[in-house]
Length: 298
Image (tube, rainbow, N blue to C red; front, side):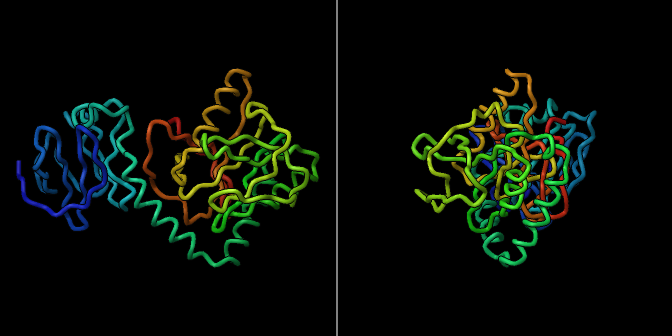
């Protein structure tokens, strides 16, 4: 095995494994067995190693290993259950190689991107996205939905809320319990009803009637970034992850099927976002380009 020194950019560390990526033509892996060794791109592993997107054949001892080198949000992805997953990261659940340290630089990058979007472009993208949503059959069938009251840089979903009110639907928005890091859906009296800002520049509805999460048919979710499978990068407090976990438990108990839609600009859709075991994916992505179903279970 060819081993050579590197100056890597750190992507993720856990107690048992480390992955690194160099901006040049080298990739590296360090494990507990080789804590200081970085495997160069030309090194020979069982099944061979081909940097940048290729994979080690599934029949090899390291089958199913792929490197996604498009951005720092990438990292190493393992086919679920492959031997390399248990060999390199035995303490992580299947498919959960990305850790919280992967998210921090990506959050900073996405915040900069959103801050740079011209307001007129964001308004046009928001209007187009809402038009796609209102034309969808899931919107037509929904009786109760939860929207979000956007912060600067987030899409404006008020056109969809106005359409929902016009169709006689119940429209909610999240009211936060900032200390407990939870939220509850509070019914809105009108799409442009007064809001209040208590913390972190987040607009909220005044306290009012709460709609049980299990009664919601459609939930619109913001995010800093999403990927095509539906995994979401939030702002780090976990409000939506906790809320969606509770809502899905309620839907399962009631044998209903609420639909979770991530709303963003097309520029926020990445090939892959870092994720952890507790992260809740969305069922569909809504952008100015349209509404597409995600396949996070596959």
